[in-house]
Length: 221
Ligand code: ADP
Ligand code: ZN
Image 1 (cartoon, rainbow, N blue to C red):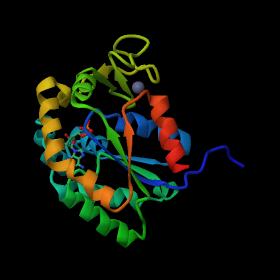
Image 2 (tube, rainbow, N blue to C red; image 1 turned 180 degrees about the vertical axis):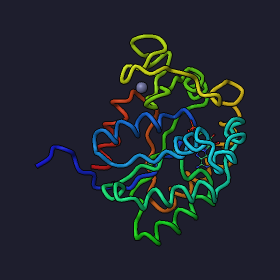
Image 3 (cartoon, helix red, strand yellow; image 1 turned 90 degrees about the vertical axis):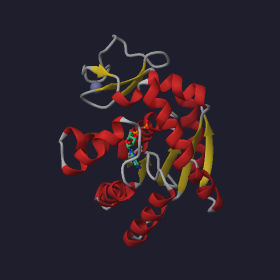
């Protein structure tokens, strides 16, 4: 017997602007349901840190807030969802981000005989997004996410979980955050209609993390 709650709909896409709370909620969901967290941003930052060929290709684009090529990210996701830990379910956090990526994902899913069960759309206004992005702090060691205003660490600059150093992502400067929002409205927002049409979408409004978790659990369990 285990006391891990089961998800009725377990293969998920988290869709929403940068700063909408996808990563934070994804980490809570992973802790609660033991499903896999696939963050293309985290994977790409790992590739950049390791200076792999993919990382070198992505680095400048990420710094300026542009998207990295669809085929490159889709290939990473395809390999990742084929891994055995994804069978309990997975959250695609930050992917797909273009219609083309959604199509490439469908190809990969068909091959692996998998389905997406729900697309969670995080609805947050621009002012809140910019405020959150520019106040965001990340742990260098364990990737935990903090916010100087709404979710400060107990000790300034230090991770509560692992004691690691907190830093601001270079793409969270005000200027780059604004470009990322533009990219979102231009390239990613069309996916809202795309997934609404096939009946998978449900929207969650910005709220406290426990309130959002409750709403998502009601919808998915
Ligand atoms: P956020 O959701 O806060 O924008 P992410 O960590 O998801 O941050 O992404 C950071 C950067 O990584 C993006 O601005 C983009 O350059 C790149 N990236 C992440 N996911 C994708 C994707 N699916 N397609 C293209 N580029 C991506
Ligand atoms: Zn940490």
